[in-house]
Amino acid sequence: MIYLETVGIAYAAVPKAVCTSVKLILSQLDPEFVAPTNPQRLRLHKRYRTSRFRLSRWQPYEDAFRFTMIRDPLRRLLAVYTNRVLQAQDLKRSPNLKHGRVDLPMAPDPDYFFQNLQPYMRAVSSIKHHALPTALFTGRDLGFFDRVYMTDEMEILASDLSRCTGVAVETSHANASGVRPDLDDLQPDTRFAIAQFLEEDYAFLNRYFENPFH
Image (cartoon, rainbow, N blue to C red; front, side):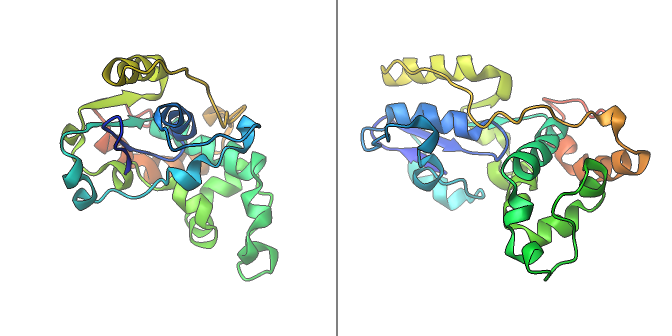
């Protein structure tokens, strides 16, 4: 939970659901945040830590404007490969993989990665963090929040936060994941593995997103 006491805002961040972009908005509302000269080097995630949902953490802030941002589970998972594997090179920097403690390729193609997602999650903490189900970060009851935004509603979020705080904020999209793998180009076994992995997430978010595997 990320709480800005001065403006009465509480945010449950979900990895790979434009949380960096939302944190950039929060930094504009936070008088204690000092931005470095280069915006690409903002230490947003150190100040605004993404954590798993615990109701006890939220109870002291019942009067805050509580919100979260969610993303279509398939698009979110595919972005893990594009952003964390290809762009951030998390596998090549993993001590477990670099030193051979886990026998997994450091440069897998999408089919191999998604067919072996669970072993990669066990071996590389950043992969696990970004691929965990949405409910671990939002809690099981989305009705707890004053507003649940989808990732294409950044402008609405900015407008709502500007209105409730009296501070004009600007939106920007950080950590763009580039070109994601196309589901149709993946092997049938890969699509099956992804479908199994996302079943729980789509059931949880069925009010917002249609499961493409059904």
